[in-house]
Image (cartoon, rainbow, N blue to C red; front, side):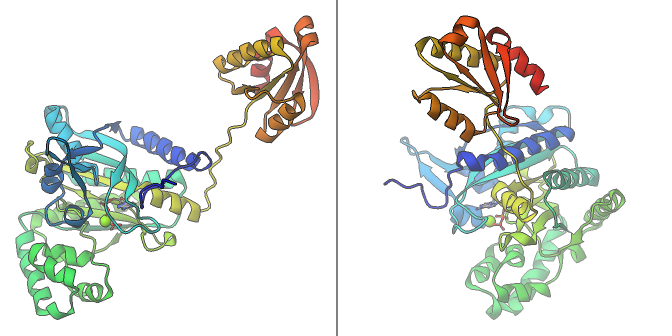
Length: 419
Ligand code: ATP
Ligand code: MG
């Protein structure tokens, strides 16, 4: 038997309801904030992610699905959406449109990671990006959008963590302090973090291993080392969130996995879903557009992992009702009735009503059993005498009552019943 690749998933019909619920809610909430959907390729030039996500990140160094095509070009299955959106806006000349640009996407992403609950190799993200707005009002709007989406879904008990990681102005000084702190304690770092100390010391703050975590607890904090402009920006964001009643905690340890972040970074965490508890990660990336060859437009966005949202919905006890029982089942007896039944079910469907008839030559008894099993609201049996009189008994399956109905008017009858 051929099996799916490790770390991928099938979403079977009985499970798809929650996905549709999340996608519909994402579209609805995005629209309220003036975001439009953008779609882009599943694979891009490898260089886009090397430059856009950052050479020293785990994503680029260890997690990318990279391949060469038949003409030896290097492509990568998208590990995230932000760099792709930026590429698309630059390529399509959208950077001189009226600002801000507000875009959202619902995509599959690919990362070569160790599969576990809430972590897979093909995974799904709802993401948003805003460009051209540098003020803290933009940060607050993006956080409010994420917060409102999580609440609208019905997820409970999430915490918002925010931090500021500064800008190219204040980061060098901070880096120096950080490198000094970790260098003095080098022997306590894990092998990966020893490497990070040389390539990307900020990332040590994000390390999951207990020794590094303990060490990171006393490390210099980005928020204590901000330049006046970054300080003011962070203060502005906090004031907006406070005033709007959006609760947050300042978490000096969030630095985000990707290289392009500046100033505000944030996460929504749901502790009831296990170790992979970050359901949303986001932040500001003011340098990214320029780094990818576009104008110096500031940007801010987030991405949420849909499988983690599903875990959080379950933990919150949200039931998704994805009932799709036919409204009407038409059971024909004989060839002529079968032709009439097909005509009728099509009329029902045209009127927006889900109707079914027999497709697998069941006996009448088996058809009635099938209608019952699938939860049909009404059944109609059509045989020669019904065809002749033009009337049939319409059975209401819930109340077990029967009404004689003209076949020509049966669609209108049900339409009135349903409304
Ligand atoms: P993590 O620390 O959990 O690896 P990350 O920092 O790598 O997350 P981002 O690149 O910020 O994640 O992606 C945003 C969101 O996408 C995450 O918060 C998470 O909900 C989801 N996500 C990331 N990687 C995976 C994965 N392999 N499987 C499922 N969801 C994922
Ligand atoms: Mg990761």
